[in-house]
Length: 231
Image 1 (cartoon, rainbow, N blue to C red):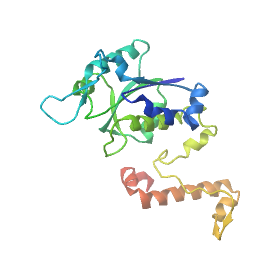
Image 2: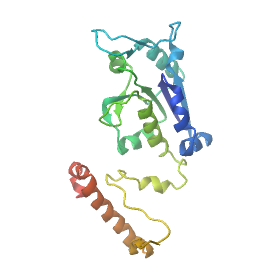
Image 3: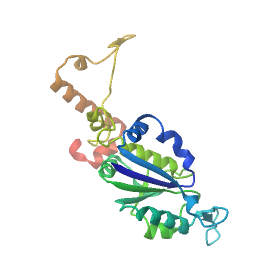
Image 4: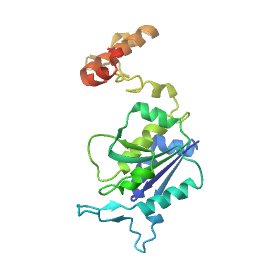
């Protein structure tokens, strides 16, 4: 079973994403142990402050190193962690390959950035990886942590009932997924491609690959530039 710990100043933001649908079932089936920690619980300040003004007079507030190290030390005293991730807009871009890699690990911590970020010494000495979910800035790293958790947990064996479905997702083979259809086969004259009704598995598979390639060329040509063998 994977153990995923999330450290945040806003634990209530995770109540929705983690208590519904696939993630909820994964927790109920004990396929993942997902634990959210309030960083303020590790503050020694009587007001439970975990931030302070930055040196140099810059605007905004910065998460302090002391409560973060205390939280990490508390967790690391209980088990060895494979990755300690910090969510940051200037981290490594998160993609399907990284989700696949993380899904093979046993113990992961995600530290959510907030305000103007964390004391740089946290990044220099306490974490093992920085991840960004896109080239934009959020008010905090909680939504990014939820995205990473969802993307990783759905790949764990047994989480999705039809595990082959995850293997056909966009980006698994560095291509966008092909179009999908369901009943009715003819809706207001808008028809499902005949090949999908043929029952010929080989032809259907070839059609899906060609559609994936065409959609990738049209919508995300950068993927083919990065992986020219797919062109």
